[in-house]
Image 1 (cartoon, rainbow, N blue to C red):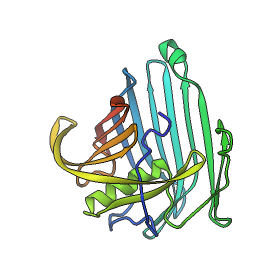
Image 2: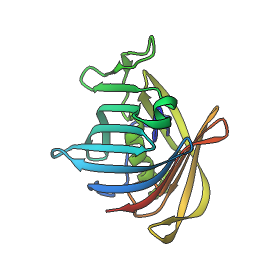
Image 3: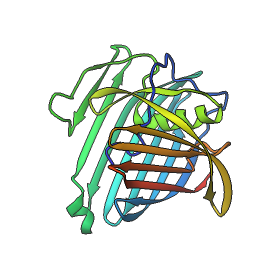
Length: 232
């Protein structure tokens, strides 16, 4: 999954700005399909202190477990990651043969202005990577993207710092489509980000804090498809 929800982008954003929607805790459940294996997913947002939040994603099924957790600070309209972890494990069955166990941790030191990476890091990608105002990680990007789409913001450009590097990426709006959430048919804004062999597509419904559907494709094939079942 490398960065499951992650890879979503930004180009020259001075601040990770969000619309006037207040940040609130939530619990969301998804039906997921990961590399042809059916799975369940949980996405949660919890407040740890006045301005610090913990945002997590867990996908389990068919012997596989994928987990991502980001801790971030929200100061007004500026949101910035403090730390993140990303792991995938094949615990049993076919997943134990298909998935390579991997764990990557990132520390964002805003005082020093740099990010460093540990765990299963590729050679030469332990950092440091210089941080810029507005930098995000893949998980926090989800929240920013949803709220920017709902606010009608354009262009949807961001700068992502993870996996030992900084990447500028852009999402394009591709009209509206209908999605089904909890038995209800809803109108959703479709946004797409294409980066070479990889593509991420998100469907955003007004009033929902998370994507109603999230599809990651590679080489024209679906890699992971998550469809929202409920959020509260």
